[in-house]
Image (cartoon, rainbow, N blue to C red):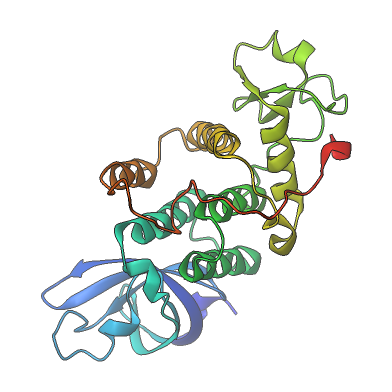
Length: 281
């Protein structure tokens, strides 16, 4: 039902961010399963004895009861479903989760429910919190699938210009055109930049796979960095601006001790063999 017609709503949501509001309240930005993006006020949430405050931290999945106020929804009940506490444990975790939230906010509007996107958000934050896979893999999967859900799916299977199937060799990618170009067409396109066969292979694998299938992928650090650059350039073109959180993450990584052994590191590798997708090119 249209939330504009309701006086009370029960929703499941992820808290994206909060800001100070008035003397003791917090203004929340939520992504709900039932209604998409919403804003709500948590009355008294900044008071020391507030029972709601602990349930309304960023990256937390919550069950909420909302009552209609004069201008905004008001949180009357809150229950934590997934706290994702590990994401608050260090700056890297905060940076990765903040990137997910920032990208979601930049690619979506307050325009109604998107249950597939809600599930992608919940699953991505859980994967980052559990820390079982390299963060780079989790984020590249998230980027490719949110692009798909937002209507910006890059073409990775055939040349965006001549429409010929991509062959198993190095290619070109154009953010402006929204996809891959064969060597012949890429050399003629000013906006194209080279993309290696391996980077394209892994991007295609992540784009078309379930996460259970995608997590088998273990590109080398060089290929992983290339994939990140390609997608960041594409996102920058779509959004017409650079995201803030990747720069924050770069600064955090630069300040990490060189001997730190962190499973959040993007350089983490695994002995698991990458899937053979050569025949799919």
